Length: 349
Image 1 (spheres, rainbow, N blue to C red):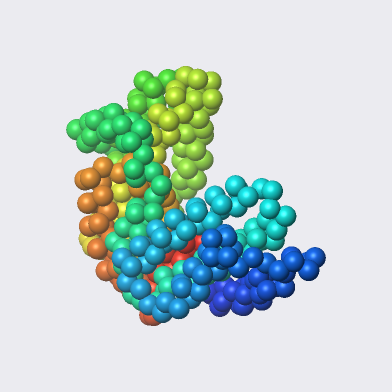
Image 2 (cartoon, one colour):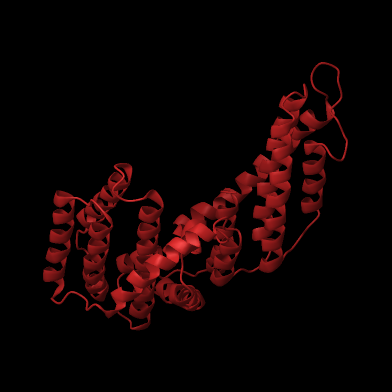
């Protein structure tokens, strides 16, 4: 359902592009409204962006690597154009030039969305594109913070998962969350203790993932969010540094997302998913790394996690094919999903 909804947006975007092109012609050819023509110098922001838009409109098909390079180029051009606009605050034509640049920026989003759908894409290419465009990859301060936290997260692999059957695990999970909400998180030691205990019970929870069909776990989601809010409250009170709080929470989320996706792949390959309702849930869970991982999260992945994601990405199409058979879906547009996710990402730029 979500895939069809996303795909159906593309004709609407094309229609929007037509409207924007008409508006653009008003801004760039009808003058400033007081008889003064719009400047056409090559070094003015509108002229730069207009030339670049024309260049991108002439492209018909790009590989994923070429698309990535073009998007990086667009970011450089965009930064230059809008930096120039910020400097020219005394130019009487600035409001008209700024409007024209914003319209052309929207048009470039549409053109790059078209190019994202111009050829077959893979989930691995989608992750690589998002990673290359992350503004945090070269953030040395963030990388230093991540290196300090990685030894803690690596130590979690040596801790056993919580023992027990399904009901015991769910009970332990609820108790952990309730106690954390009641006592609060007031420092780094509280935060790492919570993450370690949660990780042990979450891994046990994943071992029963295929057996949770019909179980009401909405309270787990709600109370987990409340626990995370405790961390931000501690940061607000100065009990934890903001950067440290964000780094630990995002690295925790990365770890859980990869564990969850890995479990989904294993359950699908092990034929532990049979019911349509299960298949729908597994589709959504498998999409999470590609839809939810942003530039900040990608920058905090360890080398091993990045390799795990590549393996999961390579296995995702076959997993979706199996789930499609359970849902009795012909999968006519299943191969287009990575490109559609690229399109969605481009509209955030």
